[in-house]
Structure formats: structure tokens, C-alpha cells
Image 1 (spheres, protein in one colour):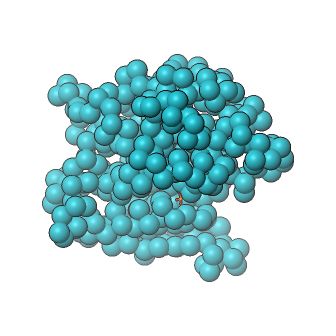
Image 2 (cartoon, rainbow, N blue to C red; image 1 turned 135 degrees about the vertical axis):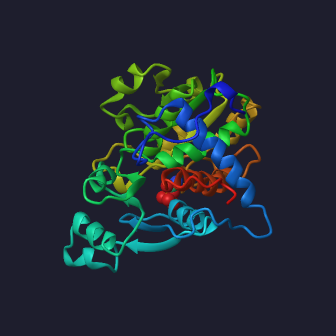
Image 3 (cartoon, rainbow, N blue to C red; image 1 turned 135 degrees about the horizontal axis):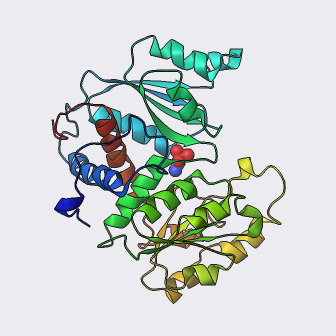
Amino acid sequence: MTQTPDTQISELSHKHLLGLVDYSDKEIELILATARQFREVLYRPIRRVPTLRGTTVVNLFYEASTRTRISFELAEKRLSADTVNFSASGSSVSKGESLKDTAQNIEAMQLDMVVVRHKSPGAAHFLTQCVPSAVINAGDGAHEHPTQALLDLLTMSDKFETFRGLNVSIIGDIMHSRVARSNVYGLTTLGANVTLCGPSTLMPVELDRLVDRGGVRITHSLDEALEGCDVAMALRIQLERQGSNRLPSLREYHELFGIKMSHLEAHPDLLIMHPGPVNRGVELESKVVDHERALILDQVTNGVAVRMAVLFLLSGTRAQPDG
Ligand code: CP
């Protein structure tokens, strides 16, 4: 998938990346094009460029993470930035320090950018009012996870000529999914059709607003969601966010909404994605996770390149991606 010259811009109009809801198609295309350039760096013998030398980035993680956290840290190192990692556990948060105070104290050590993951929706936006640094949302509650959606878009763009008319089904726990929200915004902005599929008890209350954007439809039938679908994105069942009992059982969920080998056989061109971590045997049959048409590890690789691109574009540096 390539940019046409008349769609090219050279910089973002935003200081922060809080979500994809207000990013334009040109801005998203710029991030993807920049990520493609940075991805090439990951395969060099020396996987490092001096692009962000002298820039200091703090990674504030108030919630568990494997992929996003390691990916941001690697992206920062690949760009030669100085990085500081903060975990809520073992910090003064356990002594009652607020997010604002923690951020302002860390900022007082002279930082340039803040990456934040937090269980509260709006935490990244709140930080923009507390510190002067550029803020990147690494997932805020059930609100948005913009860099995940961007890496998903990059992964799809490797497989398809255009997003226009692409049919993507997002399946599972839509209600609690920041990944679903960011993907709906990103995919529809680029012209893809999105089907949201899951049990009615796991559909968000603001569904009408998502549908009103155009290009979004709802179904509670997995067969319907997979008919004519190019990419099926299964979402993790978020056991930690369920609150009340919204699912009869994980076995029944798998029966009704789990993607199985029989689905891959019935849809020979269907590609499978999942943001991770996967509950094998719940969202996806274990053999599907390991199938050649599952792009899950490509998504992880693309995460580093996308985060390099976002860090570079929000850093304010005018240096070229390769130095
Ligand atoms: N996809 C994702 O956000 O994974 P982590 O929770 O491991 O960062």
C-alpha cells in the first residue's frame, strides 16, 4: 500500500497522541509511511539510528503490559533516546502519590516526552494539563490504544493495496476494548468497513455514536461477521474488567465467538489478527494462533516501527528518520 503524492503531508498537526479519533487520514498515512522507513532499521546489522539523541522519554506504566511496554522501550533505544521506565508497583504510588504529582516530579528532572498506560480513561489527556511534554497514550482504560491500532493498520497495509472497501471484523469484548475503539476510528478514517461482533452484553453503550461515523455495522453472529471478511481481529476477553457476570462461561463464549480451524477452512483468504495477550482456546482455537494466516507476531514487530514513527513525529525534530 503506497501513498499517492497528493495525500502526503510532512508533519502532524497534533502535539500529543491521545487517540485516533481526531487524527486525519493524511496524518495516519504519514505515521504509517514513516513506520515503513523505520522498520527497515530493525533489520540492519546495527539496529540504531541517532534520530532522537538528546531526547529523554519516560515510560509511565500504571497497568500491566508486555508488548506495548517493551515495544516503546525498544523503539526509544533504536532511536538513541534516553529512556526512564516507571512502574506504579514499587514506586511512591503505593504511598498515595497522585498521577499529577508523580508526573510533575518526574518532569522536574527535565523530560521531553511521556508515554503513559493507565487504567483510567482520560489519564493521558489529564497528563497533558499537568506537564509541558508531548504525551503518548499507551492505553487508557477502555478508551483508546492508538499505537496498537496504528500497528494493526500497518500490518493490514502490508497485505492489501488499499483500505478503501476493506472488510474488517472486530470480534469479542467490544465494550471493554480500547483497541476496538482506536481501530474503528483509524479504519473508518481510511475508508475501511468495520463489523463489530460480540455478545450483546459486551457491546458498548455508545455504540450508536460509533455506527454514526459510517462504515460500521453490528452483528451478534460470528458467521455473519466472517462472511466477506478480509481480516478478523479477535479481542481478548478482559477478565479483569468484566465487573459483573457478562458471560455465561468462557467455554460457551468460545463455542459462539471463538475463531476455529473450521472458519479458516470455510474462508480460505481470511487473515487473523489479535492484539495480545491471547487466551488460547477462548478467542482463538490454539491451532489458529499458530496458523500461517494469523498475523499476530507481525503485529508485534510492526509495533516497534510504529512507535519509532510516533516518537519521531511528535518529538519536534526535523531530522530525517535515518538520522
Ligand atoms: N496489545 C497490548 O497492549 O499488549 P500489552 O498489554 O502486553 O501491552
